[in-house]
Amino acid sequence: MPELASFIPAIVEIVKNARDHGRSIGFVPTMGALHAGHLKLMQEARRENNFVVVSIFVNPLQFDRKDDLDRYPRTLAADMAVCSTVPVDLVFTPSAAELYPREQRAFVDVPGLTNHLCGAFRPGHFRGVATVVAKLFNIVRPDRAYFGEKDAQQLAVIRRMVEDLNMPVAVVGIPTVREPDGLALSSRNKHLTAEQRQLATLLPQMINEARSRLDEGERSASTIREALEPMFRTHADVRLEYFEIVEPSTLAPVERIDGPVLIAGAIWVGSTRLIDNMRWPGGQERN
Ligand code: AMP
Image (cartoon, rainbow, N blue to C red; front, top):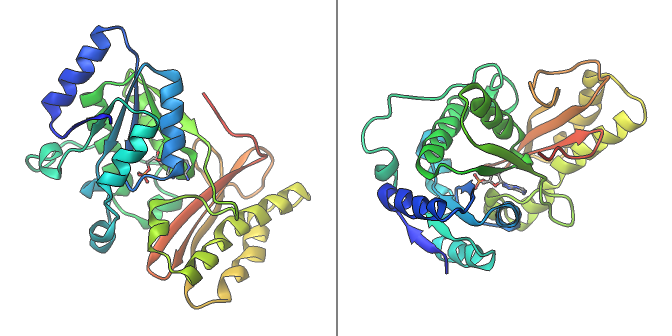
């Protein structure tokens, strides 16, 4: 079993000891309810570093809806079992009081990158993400940190934060792990009923259909959007929140597609919100 610690001084001490022994530190921040997507990040961290730290923290600062925070799955025993298969060296499970002992007054904002996609629908979300990741980086001080391309906007925000603030950490993006039918693995998939689980595949289907249209030579984002939106009018339990084609690093919307783009969408299935994205042309970034 990996070592488990909930207090910041213990984490600082254990990681310092590893670093003093010449080990490189790989870090995977998560909110728990670990699945094969998280596992891929941990395995990559294991492959590239001598000491791997995973954090499990459901960060209240990044939740724009209280019901989403309240019902977010918390499965620590199962998560520890996943971590021990990698194996991970250290699991950090702080309480909210440990990370936010008093009102947080200092924040990291990355405006511009957060105006579109999820940022337009989740006020304060990326400020909460960037702020907690900055705090976790300062506590763990990793050499490399691993994030999923599934949350492409999050990855772009973290990369920009690290560059603009000269944070001494290498950010590694990991391709999205999917179910056999194309649905991206997500902790929120646990909320879906069997019927909703079926409907959820509309999201990767829509993005794949957009890719096919680009392959066939269509170059107008609005034409593609108008062709695909009706996919979501067939069932009362599913609703398209957004569908956008954006430039992969600035995330600015692209109307005329003449270079690599990110095709991204968010849907609601019942009361569960799901996101996904794919690059076009294919081929995932890895650095
Ligand atoms: P979360 O616990 O949802 O905050 O996710 C923790 C990390 O795992 C984030 O960097 C996510 O982008 C990444 N992640 C979540 N789902 C997947 C997936 N299906 N494939 C790859 N990475 C993922």
